[in-house]
Image (cartoon, helix red, strand yellow):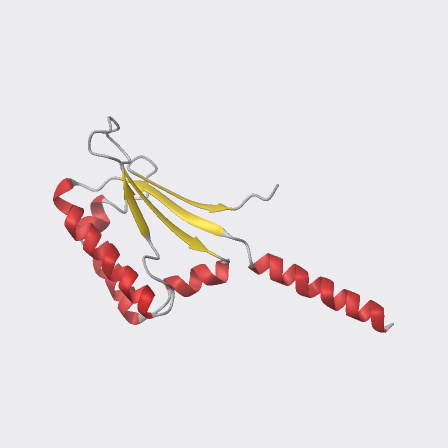
Length: 133
């Protein structure tokens, strides 16, 4: 009987562990108007500073841009962030009042209106989960 209870307990703990520990990325493809690039990069830097001070590491949100001589005219920027679980995602998005304030101000700014549009034409956002094979 002890072995059965131990086995069931181990199985339940394993299931809970794997259910909460799904590696995933949040990926964004978007454009930033040239006149907003410095403001956008400052906003990203400020958000990263808050997350770093909260213990989530340096450069949590990583920004990439294609080279200026690249012929692509849309979706020239890429942002990526990595999470160990849905709980980790929630924790990083509810880290502090300062973090919330930065995002609230951004939504009311030109960056919010022209960059973070989530319209699948000028801003594509996906939560992707690692595929194990």
